[in-house]
Length: 258
Image (cartoon, rainbow, N blue to C red):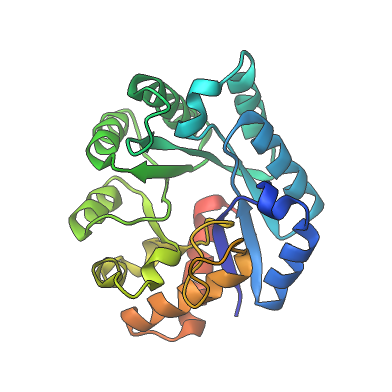
């Protein structure tokens, strides 16, 4: 029984000083694979360095919407270059965030569009951040779908069943993080129970969003994805063993990893 943490920020300062320990504790918890997710050009380089060093780690390359206003000349070219690396298996974290007001929406949309077009051009899936921006993201994805197929994951999903269905219809996967385990997250667990078996993923978003029974305790670590998986397996009425196998197979299929 192996798990795949499909979203962890291993280069975050809360984890970067003990990456070897983080990965070892993950392995002890049967978390055999981790996607190290980049948020800037520099972060994406760091994630690739970790993925190159540790066989069970893969990486993404991208610019987070909340960092899009900080982009320096050459940063996007670096993301494009990194996207061609074999151990870079996804693009992002990208998307739109209307909760924080640091980055103008037009700038976020520009970089989200760049990621989408690059994904469609090279065939690597998107890692999409959505915060108070479902309508705006769906508008852009619908337009992109007219150009060609989409592949990717709505990470740390907290939307409704109807929203999830719209993303599924566009060809995307849905991933659940620690919030699905919280006591008041009954509605989100209902969503998780309804996702088709072949399109559901789990993640930690480490070092954030620690699941129960570690809620509020940072840093979160990939090892804790087991608790999220156990919660979702229970609401879906399946064994943790079968759910681990299903979500790991889903992640490997999406990211093209062995």
